[in-house]
Image (cartoon, rainbow, N blue to C red; front, side, top):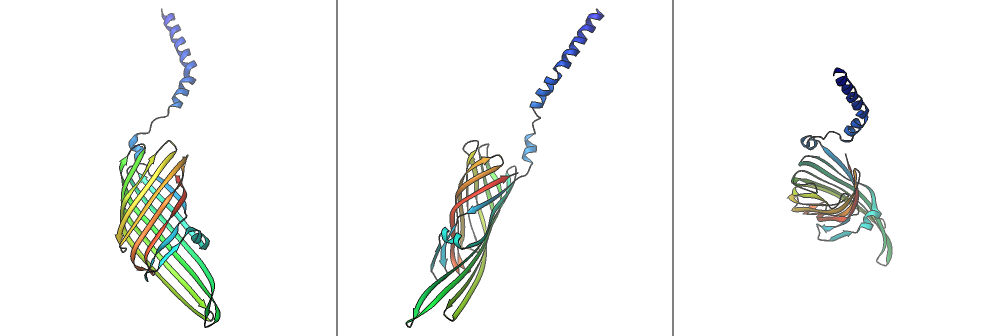
Length: 261
């Protein structure tokens, strides 16, 4: 009887040893699941450099209409920085967007005064800095859609330098101004498929401006931790004599990439 039990024990031990590699492989295939509350406690960051093919429009303090289509903006553009940064944890998020542009242009023409022809030349430099910063909370948070309400502020700084010459006569003028406004709005993203998604954004605010607003919409395509997107963006202000302007509008197509980590 004892020999029989020993034989069975030896056979069972040999069977377990022979199956150990297969059991280990099965265990390796199924890693432990991270609890949901730990995932939600992690900060998720993204950096989004982009290229905004923006045109400019608005009205001077003297009531003159100004407009500069994108092809003129890019022709006179000497330097630009455009990027967005986001940090999200669970339903909470912190967002920052900044734009800096330096436009330098010149124009030469001829004019006749008392039957004499003079060369007239205008050199213009326009610098602009825009930053929008906010804190948000997701009011819709599903596997396919996230929509956050947010509040924050937008800051605009403008500087204009004009140099004019007509024959031996020359004159120059420069002005700068800034406004800061409180804003509220909604931002969201909805997945259409595993890789395709649409993003949407809108805000409105006031403060030192009479009113400011922004609208944005884009379609994106995900490649691992990078989202490529194309869309359209519009930012507008109505104010009273800021750097010689009473109104400013920037609008046009946007191309960019969002890097997530």
